[in-house]
Image 1: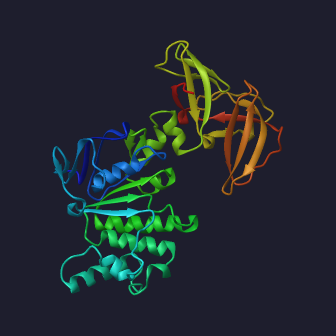
Image 2: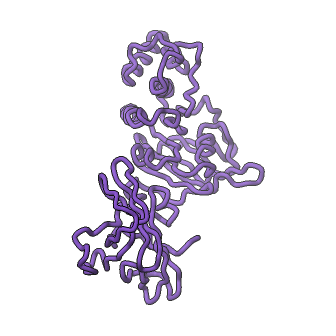
Length: 358
């Protein structure tokens, strides 16, 4: 199958600085792909190149196998079958909702009116056609912007932080509604965000960017559970870092020796575990260490601080073994007093081992 959107070796510089660095990516029809990464990593510039607002220095952009930018060809933005949604919605304040949605449509009046009403019904605003943007809530404006972007039936939909201006309370519902409409339309969607939760919630495929490059690409499950490096793991959640030295493919930790294959003797390694996989062993209190193959040696730690976070409690510990600090999350309310001694275990199958970095 020919990808709906394909980027090949895209590079873009501003003032000699590389902003997008040899980036390649493809998006299939009906697929939602998310460009995820910190601010300044090149996500929005990539979108602007696809839209035709910026011109890459090298590389090609293809729409359904047709070259639209590169090798001397540059199809103007209005000739590309691409829909755009941005964080400010950019609705025309002097046009009513129906006129905003119809703005990019061509053809006879009755066909345009039918398409506008179809989309307004689909986004739950069927009776809002005569209203003006200032009469709408932020969530309603976002849905009008979505309907307007979809009205010309684009084959590709580009979305640049489209939910960032919405109230947190409404954001999840609007995301889900938007995703449902996009799936129904069958467009290939490229969504830019710096929020991992948003990417995990919406994307079929996540391309994690850093410094203008895609450092890892795959479905959300694989990126979360098989990060390519420590920074990738930390981008999706808080992490604990246990630093050690590999000797004979083994590294000493507060929880016993861990296998660290592929690292030479004397190599510094970082063993990564997320707070939710560091467990307080309530059954073992007072009985002392009792190793298990999966969890290794229990380690004793002293509570430094505990905070209730709403759905869980976050407990910070100082380890008896070496004085290092680790964090664990516990469902519901658990607020031990500072100084409390507890035993901890950690899931070896939930750890990641990488070469040590600063």
